[in-house]
Length: 74
Image (cartoon, rainbow, N blue to C red; front, side, top):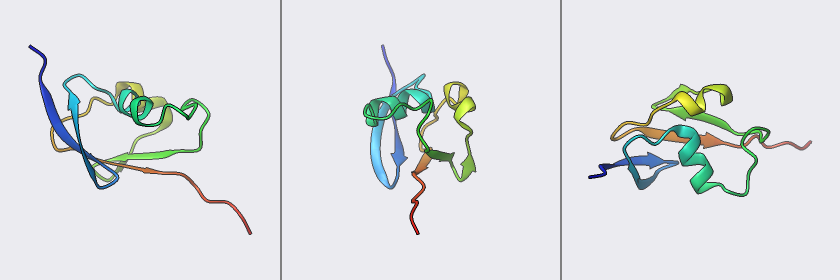
């Protein structure tokens, strides 16, 4: 039996499967991005998660995930 639980991504509720990493979640919700190169900042429960740590960051029930794409211009 697969267990699922709720998390929040950028203020929106999502149900995910137990064992989902931050990298898994990002790949599922942003298939258009090459996450190994994209300028995308991530945080879980207010703590920064580096790009290299996303595959090891196991999500937990009620986690609050925030992503941010830098805006450039002048």
